[in-house]
Length: 175
Image 1: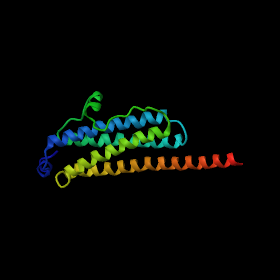
Image 2: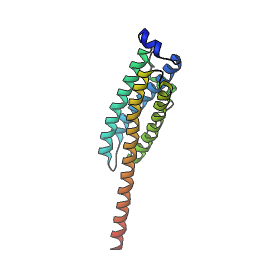
Image 3: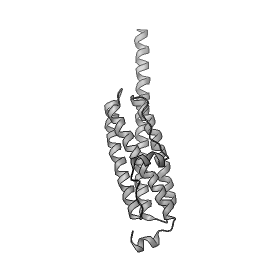
Image 4: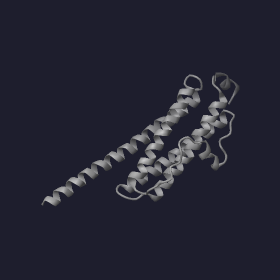
């Protein structure tokens, strides 16, 4: 970061770099969680959710790239070893316990909620103090909020479909 840019940043650079590395680690873990979920998913609406998982994996990787670039601009070094990602991340990688759509959606929903909290923390920290990091964090935060809504919508659709199927089954049993 240039001298003028350093002068307008009025916060603890070390603390910011620490939090950005936490976010960086979490983005890599989120990428993998979506990527592996897209590979193993099965069940009702599986192909639709698989497509979304692949899209979200790509977006999480883009987030990691933005965060890494900002860490370097601030004079830091992104976590270099993948083994460090789980050590530093507060939003943990959730090993899939089941390959069905609902289980994977619920796992990813919780991960998105954690990511929302992380980027809100960065926004709060940087607002009025580091405009560029704030801009990056708010952009990522908006995407994470969209991701949460996607998973809530899929889960609501599945619930409605299950209710319809239950109604249909009850009607068939009475005929």
